Image (cartoon, rainbow, N blue to C red; front, side):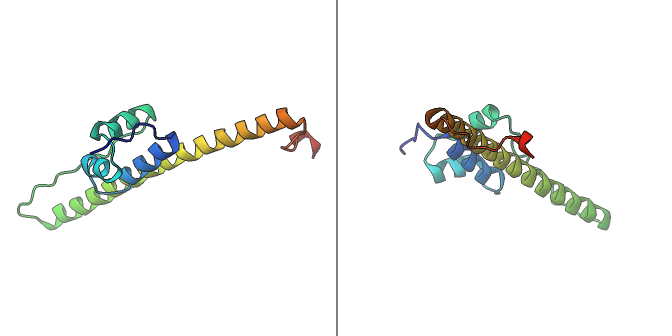
Length: 122
């Protein structure tokens, strides 16, 4: 398996978003994208994102109350998963915003014209 070494932060965040929004393991996602399995853990740490939590529910006699608890746990897990996916998506959007601002700043310097409107001109 070849390991892709030079991924952009945007690509890394897209991969994390895919991982956090799916039921797939880190190993499966790493295989899907051709990256080292430890990369996902490293990127989660670098971008300050929480990893998925896996809830294991023992299969035994299930009472009505346990069924409600189980469905509540599943809903909580789904919400945590969606939250983690949205955090990764937000990080990617923030990165895009920073890149856009830098691009505008460089263009303003090079062409000596204001590109963004001044907020005081209202």
